[in-house]
Image 1 (spheres, rainbow, N blue to C red):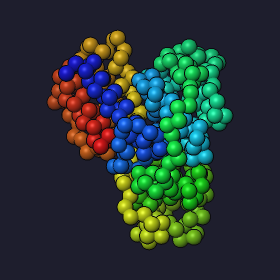
Image 2: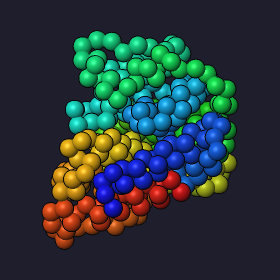
Image 3: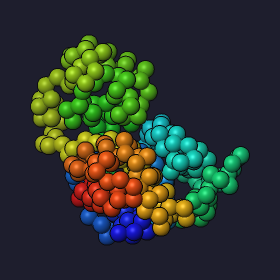
Image 4: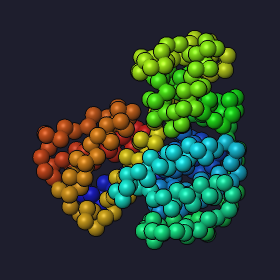
Length: 316
């Protein structure tokens, strides 16, 4: 396998993953719904923006969804997740100007033009034309919040589009932790989470110690909550921003003329992102190759094969 071939296969699987998830949210497409995991609306929106140069129709579908279903979106989370992508710097998959344009569109439901210092560089992937030329195609309906994979929206229908919904879903899925850890996982402001946690502890909704780390706070009587909320079984809860950013970096980095035909340089790039790839691999239950077992350019093929397997299993 050559780097070009790897990039094309990864691109196809990554786009399929996004189309399947948007189909679950109510976009009309030829894809089946994504059912294996609880989906994350804001993470999907930011990731779709990030890879939008790969598929304009996908990006326009996401903008149309945002226009019709704006009330379901948490713009604070869009911004925080967007910053998570932007903070990679020039090596990252997303720029400040592009993120601000998305936020402006979602706030006003009208196309926004990129402007400000560094615009030309920020728009190196061609987002400006996508915003200014956006047209509604009538391919979006309201989401069915009773779908298991849309449990995030179901909780928002109960708690509102705020931190309570995100944190309750985190606990309902069996996760544990303190406000600092939860803030990093759900991309919400820690001080607000801390206040909510104290209220829920006082009400007996949570149990454990606020400073207890992974073995600390947990939802009390999870089974009773599941019955009360009429939730039979939850799909797996995962951190989609971490997964999306890893895959986006790969698919957007490899078109570089410096990398696209050089397995040695691509292998070096793979080594640079080894730590970032461990979480997606754990979610997809894929064993990654050991770096020390594959010196030099020999690392390319086993690592590329493992990444494709990750994308395949996430796609379902």
